[in-house]
Image (cartoon, rainbow, N blue to C red):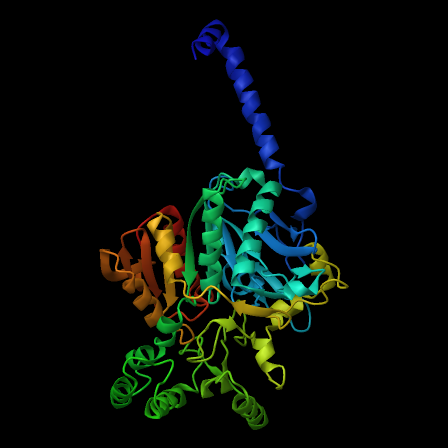
Length: 508
């Protein structure tokens, strides 16, 4: 230090110039560390200037098998080298994270354009306004991700978490300039499993001194699958609280089922639960306020045949698939987010929606805009996907994988991670009947943490946007008023608000 002071005293101007030169060279190096071959220079359907740099490509997580995970990386529109870096995962299992990019919180809104490519418009509520965000297709076999060894398509929670951790480590080798940014995980639905299991792998790696060291800070889960008991018992109190079943039926279910609403232990309990299913079977399970698609009689008969021959014991509500009607983005159906009513995720093989539906003709099960755009040859070239000989087509949710839920309840994962000081936000669209907020509220309360911010409204744009309760150990539960299963799709402005506040450590 004394030598530096002495030199500066002798020639302060020269030293300052030298230091500025070093800083400039460092900035140039950082700005060009990302692989130029991954840079997305244009996007078919969009005529303007992309608001920040986008990169896309593959990371090989297993060289011997040729297992490759596809990512689309959106650099922050604000302060790229200071803003948090967020990994986004959609659920399924088996659904592509382009769902989040196209329909929820990506940088564009997509507009139908007749039989042509969709038109892209800038999304004022994109999460890239305040963060860098990676959209990852995971596990291999989902979206544009693939393996040269098809045995890899038999997978599960543990293998997926390990692969995604490997992806992050190798991704940061490609983008070392983002290694110092705070790292967060986020996802929805079955990502309620993906996110905490991945967080656990990251923390184990940090403890073991795995390099590079990830600057992991916490995670968010939206309407997430968590625990067989809490998820399974969530529907009945939700339907009663929303006025979807009568007081009389609710009292009968409580009396006959003795608090066990997901695995009936008596025929009388099963009969009452069947009545609950019947009462709500015409609703859109992803948002009870939205219209619902009603299939043809022939389709219903085929589904009935499947249900009667299946050991999955899917409820009658599966006969209805919901749809939403929104101008931008336009989604005319909701497909493959999670399970039908009371068919909560349990240990063992978890069939994907296409696997459940492979023997029946469903009239309304695709997402036209995403499917049209992502399967266009020019789009695939622009975003650096594998050749069609390797990945023949993009699907919102794949039936290619066989997926095993092999990690049990997530409650102990959440306990361990929050006890280590990581920040956690559990958020719920309060009109989702697929993974109702009543289950998420119950399991967060069951942890027994001290309440440090008692239940209250939170606001966005000077309006009540939902309710929140804060616990010690950096755990927060939050609802979004009027939102369905895919919260940012229904409430984009409110979602950007709570997202920004969480990442910045601000109160809701």
